[in-house]
Length: 230
Image 1 (cartoon, rainbow, N blue to C red):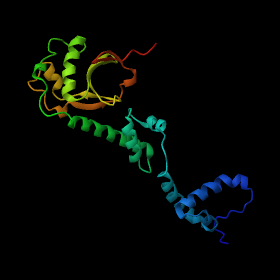
Image 2: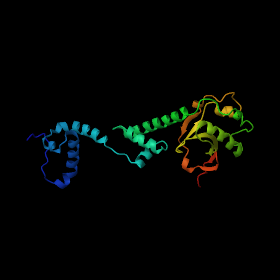
Image 3: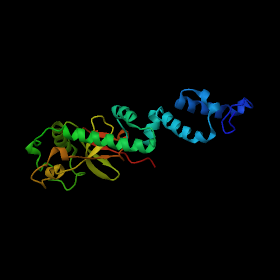
Image 4: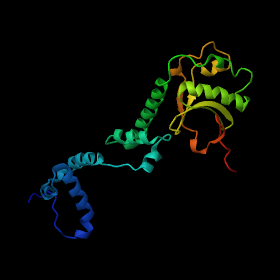
């Protein structure tokens, strides 16, 4: 027998079993038969292992908890299913993050393109101009304005108080994330712009640092993030 070949002598089988089993698994993937192991030259082993590990990685399954630990923010069930299909065979962590950002951006674009063409009710122009800040606006006014806007846009618009600041956000219908309100919409509501701009420009970047499951709804369009317990 070739002195440079790998041979299973059968000696100390209990100690060698893990190595033999792994090698058999690799050879089965590459050649279809672990019987090739006794005849394989040692010099070929690194290349064979590389090929086999690539093939094996394509069979890797990621659990939902495992996926969630890698994500910058939560995903809907449909997005998680799609993510499983997109993850390539290598660089799994980087691939997960890259594909998650792509999925979220695609979702944002989908929501933006679904907004009907045209302008929101003209009566909303300058509807918030009387108050010096978003936080100072009465909840009833926010509810009335946001209800009309939400109906026009097709998703809920909410005022969120958290981390010492107050913002208007679009709430994804799946309730897994929020998007910032951008474009000229806020300026138009405050009476600082003559036009609200294009609706497709209103949905901004996703908000990753806002835990949706911790928000408390104080009115139909008002949410509060409680201060952390001391």
